Amino acid sequence: MEGGDVVMLVKEYMTPDPMTVTEDSSILETAELMKKHKVRRFPVLRDGRLIGIVTDRDLRSAAPSQVISFDAQERELMPELHSLLSGITVKEVMSRDVITIHPDQTIVAAAQLMLERRVSGIPVVDPRGQLLGIITETDIFKVLVDLSGVSSGKTTFAFQLEDRTGSIKEVADVIRKHGGLIASILTTHTRAVPQFRRVYIRVGDLPSEKLRALEADLRKQADLLYVVEDDAAASSASATGS
Image (cartoon, rainbow, N blue to C red; front, side, top):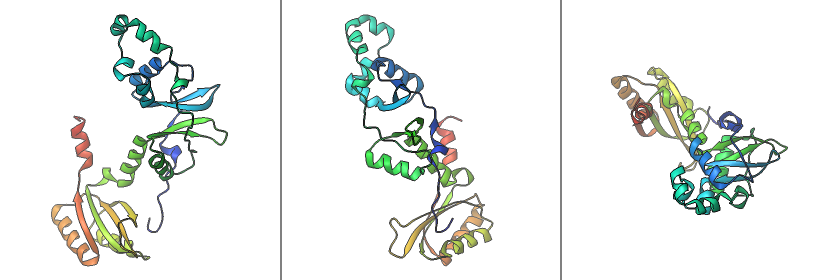
C-alpha cells in the first residue's frame, strides 16, 4: 500500500438502475415519490435518455415544503392550490446542466467533482450517455468507512514519516512484532511538512498492556503524532438501538 493510491471505482459503490421520473411528471407526484423512497434526487429521462436532474431543493423552491407534503385531507381543504401545483411539471424546475460521471472513474474523482460543483449526487452514464446508476455523498461515506478498517479495530496511530521507501514498513513491522493486525493504512502529504507524509494506521484490538507497549516502541521508532481509540462500530450499534 505504500507509495500508491487506493483505487476504488464508481461502479463498485453506485446505486444501479436508480428510480427516475419524466419531464412531464408533476412536482407533487415527484415529491411524494421522494418522501416514499427516502431519496433526495431523481434523474429525469426523455425516451430513456438523461436530460436533467430534479432534487428536493428544486421542489422546495417551486412550492413551500408544507404544501408539497400535503396529505389527502389537507388537499380536500385547499383543492385550488393543490390543483395549481399539480400542473407544475418537473421540466419547469429541473436542472438541465447535468453533471455526470462514468462507472470506471474513481471514487476520488466523484468526490472531488461533488465538492467542486457543490452537489450531493451524480448520475453515472456509459459512453453513449445512457443512465447506469447514481453515486451520492452517502456512497462516498461508505467508501471512507471501508477504507478505515473500522470493523477490524478501534485504535489508530497517526505518524509523520519521512517520504522515502521503507518508512511505512518500518513502523508496520513494529506493529506486527507486537502481534498487531493492521486493518488499514492511509497516507497523505496534506498537513505534512516538506519531505514528509502523514500516515494513519488502524490496528486490530490488543489487550491494554500490549497496546501500551506497542505505543512506547512506536514512539522510539518514529514521530508518533497521536493515538486515538474510537469504537465506531459500537457507537453505530448504540445509535441504532442494536
